[in-house]
Length: 142
Length: 142
Image: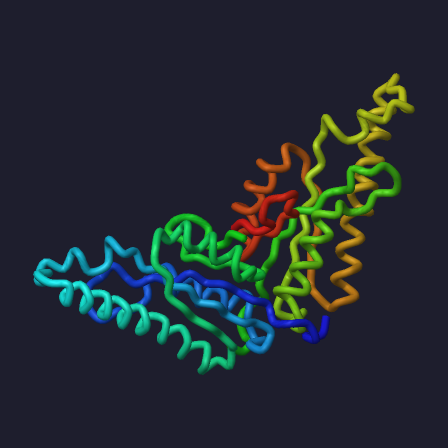
């Protein structure tokens, strides 16, 4: 049972909190992350490789900010840029955490319907494990 | 991330192979067990505590052995005793494996519908994780 094998690849879908303000991870995905650290990774950071995916929904992000008026293509361009920055800040949180704990990781953003995108990314990336935030449901599905 | 916390309690539902002969674990539950060892436990046996449950279906086990004739209460008593021995042999396999690897474990038998019994045992025992054999489905559900 020595760790001669490749690290266990844990894909984790992360999203922002629905609370407004500086982008920070939702409670459910932070709880799932902490659970994975304390219950699976435990004292063995070298045995795991985290893959963070953040799916942005094109029709949702930003459009409910009623303090913004979109009057030109440039407005939409800026909105997309801002969404991207928010997404990067979110991923930065998890990458920083992993870095501090000595866990290798990768993180990236995709756009579309989260359920569909996560499923297609699982097929593409073939992780050993998929962890998603609960929300009353169990956090684990493969 | 030191292992100062209690071990991660992994409940695992195990069953016999449907092949006849000396009781041995099904391929799917052995695969799930090996997967859990190589992907989650890895080099950290002290961080995990396995809980093996084997659910025996009263109306199924033994009754399809057409070489037996049940003519007295004693016949049924013997059948039950034989089922119990088969179940114990099955659990012995996993307990031995854990013992060799230095993983703490417990194992027990219950009777009834596996789905119902597993769910009620999860509620009772409150493991951190439930692992069941796949069979085309994912092996992980909490």
